[in-house]
Length: 267
Image (cartoon, rainbow, N blue to C red):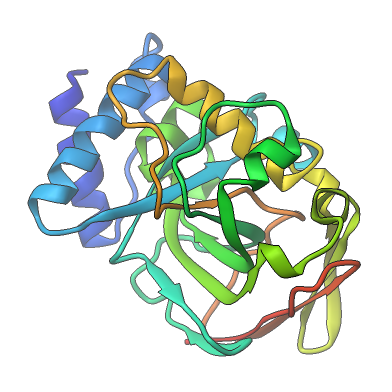
């Protein structure tokens, strides 16, 4: 299948809120390199229709969910001004009617005040970050029953549907942040029933390690720009993501880091 044809099919599925057969099931030679070519074409087309990329999402950084989704590596995609909502308060409403098979992923979001360079050092990375936040990415899947392989997820927008970014905390006011980002824990509740628990270490050891993964991958992907100053990076789900439906209320509570939890009313 040609890159253009796949991009057209997936954008149509996005716009019409429908599912399509997995690409890898129709084309056994469709691999991650081919999928990122589709991703680049989709970014070009979304820009042309007025959507502006404002950051990146990293997916499958949580090795604990790899078996469920049949993957064995992380991936990434762009997020857009049309898909990201910034909240000044930790309570808000989340509309999901435009999403296909949505699931909720509590995450840590980094904002880069300066263009970061690839590094393996937490403090060097944090020197380029001016604020962090707790957020929730709402992933969606345009393949029936979430049956996919890694190249399918890369091509299909990195499974990105929406991103809610909670109140921002300036890095300068947070002590021992690199250790806290590894050690903090999180609980996700639905109407006061704990549905899942997780920790910062679940995303490749730390949200900072997840961001480092992205920076190193982009060195070899010349069809994409490196992460730039002003971009946000959301670093992957901290716990197994549950399906969500309208009418639910979801809460997160973080311990061991100075970030408020979120309360989201799903509509």
